Length: 92
Image 1 (cartoon, helix red, strand yellow):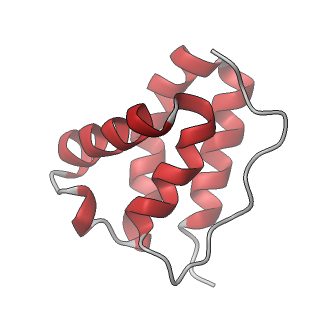
Image 2 (cartoon, helix red, strand yellow):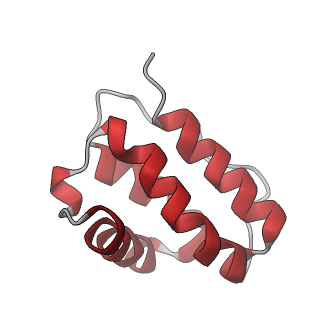
């Protein structure tokens, strides 16, 4: 699995959180796997559909994704991705 050299630009907070997070995950997992991982973790960890995801839920989603991302991407890349997700979930 390849890890992008530089992370994508942070999304606009006006955008849909699910689409923004899928776009952030896509360089690491590919677009289809990113959408599936988001769906799976929203359902398992938050008991919601991705369409119901709000920005305030992003920190919980990031915490639930981190162990799987460490396995897939390695600690450094997963921690960087988690930090990006946590930054996305912060209230401006």
